[in-house]
Each structure stands twice: as C-alpha cells, then as structure tokens.
Length: 140
Ligand SMILES: [Fe+2]
Ligand SMILES: [Fe+2]
Image 1: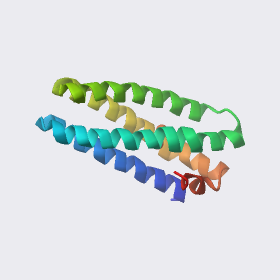
Image 2: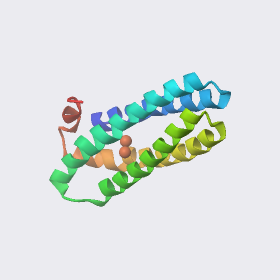
Image 3: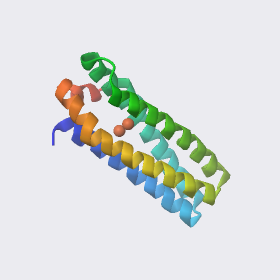
C-alpha cells in the first residue's frame, strides 16, 4: 500500500479507537472518562477532516483534476458528521446515556462507510494525481 492511503487509514483507526473508548465509558456511565475520550476524538476528527482533507488533500486533487464528484460527496458527508458531533457534544455534557449511545451508533455507521470510500477510492485517486500528497501532510 502506498504511503498516503496507509497514513490516512492509520489516522482513521486512531479516531475509531478514541471514539470507541468514549462509547464504552458512556455505556458504563463513567462520564469523566467519556468526556475526556470524546474531546480527544472530536479534536482528532476535526484535524483529520478540516485540516488534512478539506484543507490540503481535496484542494490538491481538485487543482489537478478540477471540480469532481468524489470530493464534493466527501465534503457533504463531513457536514453530516459535524452535525452529529455537535449533537453528541451536547449529549456528553448532559450525561444523557440513551441519547449519546443512539447518536454514537449513527455516527459510527456513517464514519465506517465514509472511511471505506476514502480508503478504497479517493485516497488512491489522490496518490495517482498528486504524487507528493504525503509530503503536503507533513506541514500539519
Ligand atoms: Fe473524510
Ligand atoms: Fe478521512
């Protein structure tokens, strides 16, 4: 596997790990651990989608290929993810377990499908169109 896809896949896994730690703690009602893992997840996810993808990788491939469907679709899904993150943020603060676990399930399914599309389709496209994409990410 070439470098960019591997690096971004690893970043997805790190987000998943924090996300499931938060869910596990919330399920146990350990809100201090849940809030800590949740905040770490939200920060890592935001760096991933806002800085690395929308800030660097998507503009880099669009600079080569012009406006394109896959990046537009990923941006739209990021918006759905942000809306759920904001609702989950409220649920953590309210210590509302039922609300948290329901939203968490929805976000997890959305992220799984989203990440799979990036790993299988978009990142390999970026690798082909932007050979120095991994270098660009080093500034983050
Ligand atoms: Fe994404
Ligand atoms: Fe991603």
